[in-house]
Image (cartoon, rainbow over all chains, first blue to last red; front, side):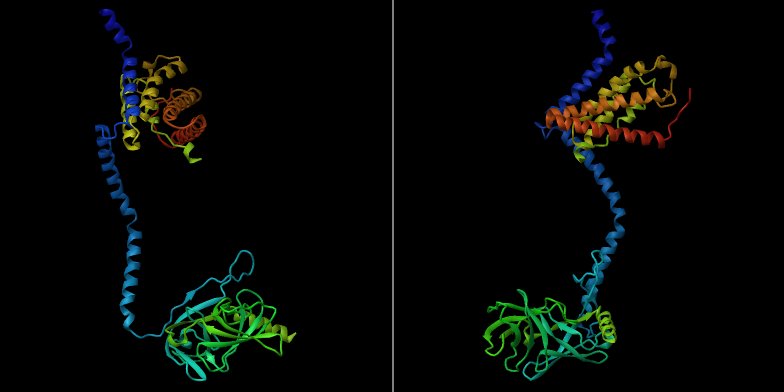
Length: 282
Length: 146
């Protein structure tokens, strides 16, 4: 008996070690079998409380951000309240165009300025659209006007808060266009008959044109952003005398019901004009 | 890669206990520290087993590395001044690898492969040693030079 106690005393540390090691290994290898053991309940209670407190503190660090986002939301809601007031549209929105100077920097070419349509006509031979946005809000003559569905026209006159747009439905309106599927420059005009149908001439017969093809603005235009929809081919006629088609194009924009439009400003236009002038002088 | 690197640092608490701490107290402290870690990692027993092991092995390593009787130092803790740089680094290196090796071995028994064991042992030990080094440089601990 004495030897047993001596043994225990001598190896007490080892026995204690083996005991603790046994407990931990037992917990490790039985944990997956008893998910609802007291240990699990206890540990998730304790750690959950600590995590909760940590989270409580951490919330203070994001208060500034939260405030900022709430303020933004408030501003958005408040600005909706004032929608009853009639003011000239004066906001700007930028669109990054794919036009590139070099491989690194992207140059913004077109600036879109929203404007409200306040008068419109389609049944005359010379149809004009009036926008509630004028020279004070950045509209200049010869700027392009597009809608959500496609091209609308060109600015021909501005006052301080208004501007007059020559719509595509104007006998003198002329616009360079291309077929979406590829080559062939044409000219869109209006024959003054149907407000939904435009004429497209000068598309060469080498281009395969079918009914339903999309007609878009050309990439060579100074004023219009390239790839803007003009209309869809409605009727294909062969011109007997020349090597070109005579096409009827249904407008993509419904001119009967234009509510909003975007005035497009070509930011690079000055640069382009300068370059042209330089060339002419030389 | 991230699965191989887990920054374990908690066992430094066991390594830095004073020399005169009794073996039973060491074991108990190791058990407690490992248990607290396991509560938060939701891995009951895993860290406890490893920290109890190094708490048990610690006195033997110190006896191996240092010729003096442990009791002579009294309140002093193991650090590079009290033990000397080379014995101290050996002490840290050995116990770190022992801790991580045992811990990852236990993980390997449950899941994983030999590659997992080896990769995690190397990655985790390296990051643990790095943390130890940083702590050694920045944490001021009570020291009395020999």
